[in-house]
Image (tube, rainbow, N blue to C red):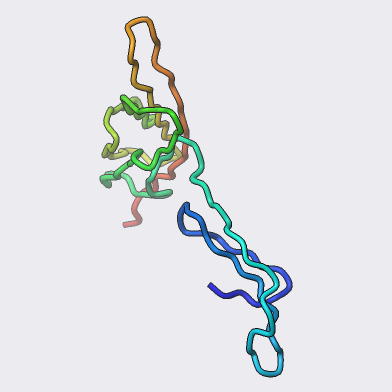
Length: 138
């Protein structure tokens, strides 16, 4: 990506290490006059439970909820727990659910850590994300 200007904002698509170059451009020719700076810019993945899902859906529509993009350093996930805020729950990395009434629901994903010894308790990390369920117009 090339951005021209005194300041630049850029959103990286995924974690990684990116080479960033600051060049001075000759405004008459458009050629690089000289390279001012070059450096590596690390972009790290955010450490959090993560729900991949639609923000909005319709009643009686099958919706997929995915927790596989959850990233927690030094945390080996043992189980996934879903609460759909309508009395229905599920377990697994991905889940499907159908809402029968319109409204805003707070979807909760909980993940627990793997326990290596009998005297340990699993750690729990949670995240909540809203979804709006609409009634279809007739």
